[in-house]
Image (cartoon, rainbow over all chains, first blue to last red; front, side, top):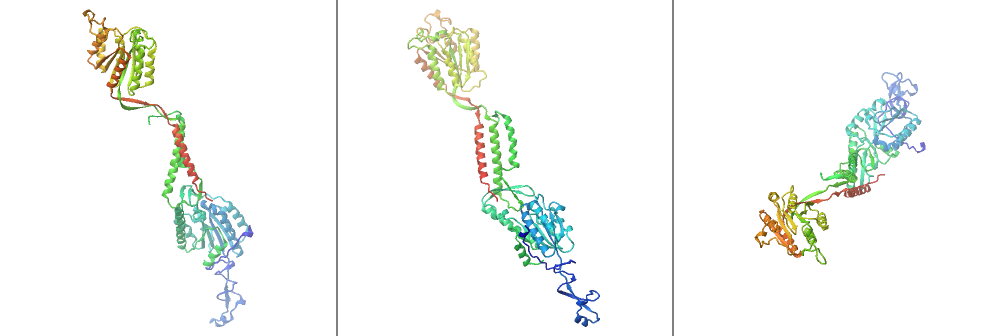
Length: 279
Length: 328
């Protein structure tokens, strides 16, 4: 299984604050290649970095030392909506979790996972760390998990996250009212959030053209019978298009650009996303 | 609704299952993440309602069929032309003789046979009549109350083929015939058809009682007198003054009594079967007043029809099931 995991490359434009060295632009001063500023020798006692020219030009006759910007480590979290509506998607989501974990570990970043259903269960919390093995176990469990609740707890995830800016992948089908979307996104604004809208084409464009269909809501258990015909199918596809526009507006209000996954997960899609914009 | 009844009413308990289609559907459900995103479709909602109603109808028809629903015997009020007729038949010995006054032999038929034959035809001609039959001999015989059941009337007329009895007691017979009209609605005309070959003296007490009864019941009286050869007829005036009494000429006196009743009365004197037929045809022609009568419609079993409906509905439901789309 591990051989099949594809990894993707992510980057953040906004510098991080982590004290630990890593692969991403940071604000810490340390061993890097990017010149940041001059400092007095007393503040940064490294005689190797004394800048003679700057020291000569200093009107107070102090030694000036060059300091460099240190690349810092990043924490990557995958937050997954474990509501009943996500049931069919979970195997694919677990694939994405493994992929994200591998990408993070390859970059030397730490990876964590939080899944939220009706409430946040401790079995679905994986604290950020550098190891792959716990992620594999968790992905196994996730692929086999039978969800049966709503996504009430997604808005309560923020206190479990580090205070420092992290990269968050917020995976859900976002099948809830837009007002709930706001309460979920509001506490996460201090982080770099990549909302991944995970839809299944069987729900709209792959519906049959003709025939009777009875749909049962995964969460409310209500049911609805539809007489499928091409016109109605077009209306359903149109409804999903509308929803896509609404969601995009909703995310952009919080400065986030959503990533729509409708044909299953492929690492290239995420690569494309990060090439188009850096967070 | 009051006309419906059930053979096995406990099977109606199955009608509770009518609630099932409200809560459950016969269609396979596909789990869908969010129903709110699906657009509203009035056509689908209408169809859904129809399917539920169809399932309920199928269940209802099935259980009504199982409960053996049937329509009770019913009466339909109709208006026809006819009368309430009571045939008062003479069953004295002399009726078994031919018109010649002898025991019938060869081609001769007895007066009773001729009467029977003609009355049977008469009954067949009059589909809407209520007909009752009384007989009299020494005492009156109650044969058949007023009924529209032609089979029963025929059987009653045929029953007069058994040998006749003794004497003639006409006053008792008349009062019994009149009693048939008690508790009957006055509709159409009421007729007493007296078929006899002789008469008898009516004593004054009975005479007074009969006068009252005839007035009360508003009947018309037809007397079909089967005259035997050489016997005095109804209209024969006595030749000798001494014979002018009820004992000697009971027929004449009975005729006079009937005429004095001030009711529509007609006497026919028949000396042979043909004359008798003519008399009966005459009555048949005269007595055609509008008549309210009630026709009985027998109990009807409806369960077969309900089973038919149930299978029809179920066939439709199978068709709907066939229309179900398959999702991957």
